Image (cartoon, rainbow, N blue to C red; front, top):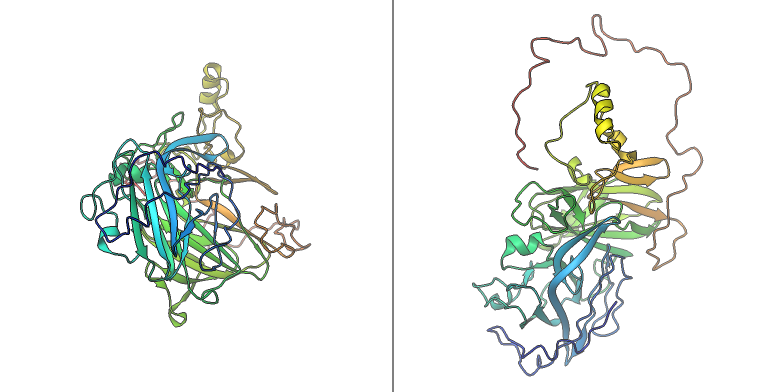
Length: 459
């Protein structure tokens, strides 16, 4: 973590919004800590202010603060950043304090917060505090509730946190560009009473989508539906951190969605209970059990479960969202014998690989070269072979012998003897079928050769 204390003290006078913020209290800037590594930082244990149980941000970190006469002060810097989506691909994004998404902000119900926003972008910006109840003039809608923050200027947002819960922050200025470039972060307000909603481990991540053509590094910001990179905290599998816990831990996962479509987040293994929405904590009698919770655009969800030993997948259940970059115009070659064509193509392109005549699973182990600065459509090696995944996918890794505070990837689960699916080695017999029925339907020459017009309509 880098320190650029005093860096902005010479950047000019502090510009204040039209609110009742104390200009004396906000007269000096707090430290603007930066972080450029995608490695998850340990939860930030509070050493000043009210105590709370901190969260762990997948592939991210929490923003340090200073106390100033009872006010908790943070300093965000909006600026261009470079984010590694996974080894082999980096993107030119915009974010906060060196990273995209920006650092998680953590505070406590009842805290008075003062958040400085310095704009180092080439255009104006603002910050909207998504889901937080505050004075209208602090809501961050450029042109409506405040002036835009010009490049090189610093504005101050100050308000009291009235209710605990899971929230987000993002610009409300040139949203189409700035959010497509990765400007977003999580804002966690902890309960005043640490015993309320207490869990052993508390994880947060944001859903974001990008359209970056292979060989390039900057997102196409005008894209509305046809994205090719689906991410947890601007990371794609296998670059996404696992959710690590000890068997028996009570675990909370908080998810925010700032893409342009809904994402049904599905977790294998233990069932979970949805405990939080955009509106705060759900009363115990109204919570519901799930194995999949749909997170709509602009929503936040929190769910909890009791950890059970094993490796459990957690992913968006839209199958294209667990893939890496791909083209929607790829032809379906299942059943097509293109060996002769492949032989002719390899004379011109020696590295060409014929794929798809039996499905696309062979892409999971493909070694065909890909363009610079992009990722395979399927990737990731597990203990039993290629995992054929990408995008919004990672694992919940639960172990019996994990130490408290240990969030490191423990490696793959060692299954107890007799608990892994195995090959049947007995005699195979043909199943009985109804008279006249066959396993493979006979070809219908009138309809099976018809190619109906189709059009991709987005996800």
